[in-house]
Length: 123
Image (cartoon, one colour):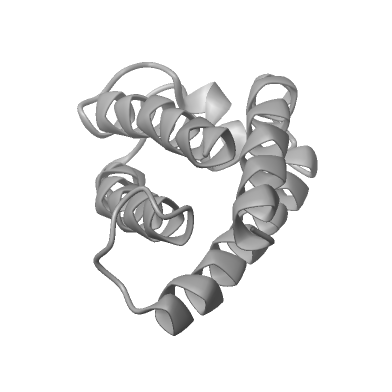
């Protein structure tokens, strides 16, 4: 299902971005409220922790889309709705950011994530 692969692509982009932030890339204006150019240690840890979460989300989405089969149908269905809720919340959080770079880049990316995850959840 195309929507599932769109979610995975968005997550891959976000994972690379979060890894770069965790390693000290000066892209802090695009994440975590955009308060610092280079993230402090606590937010670097948060960025590093986001990557395994993205991997779990990818497994849920691919399983719900029947691209892989590692979860029971009930778990995949319920988890897909949790993923959609997370994606929808991420749209709101990024749209409310005080950082214009974060608002203008991450909000549209999260809209794509939310719409595609909704398609997967309803499939």
